[in-house]
Image 1: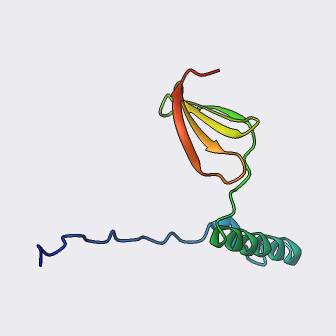
Image 2: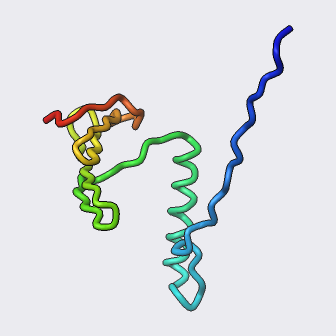
Amino acid sequence: MGAASSFVPAKIHRFRRAKSLQLTEGQASRLARLRARGRQLVGSVLSHLHVPGAIADAEIDDEVSGHRIEVKTEGLFTRIRVNGRDFYFDRITGRFDGTGSGCV
């Protein structure tokens, strides 16, 4: 029929839970632990349902890498600018929509 497929699936690495959500009795109150676990559960459900996350406008100057990052939510899109290069995402669905440079 044809040559055998040479597709090899990528190995997936699971990250450990964030330490901030693994609060012990000595570190936080029972209410704080329940809130953290509740946020973890809600976040997991939203991720499973592919619900886009909210993001606030921000400007970040990364001293380590020298990158300047700007996040701005506009009418229809969320724009992420990295060193003058723009990346656009649909504001409602969160899907990647395209790129640009220096568009204002």
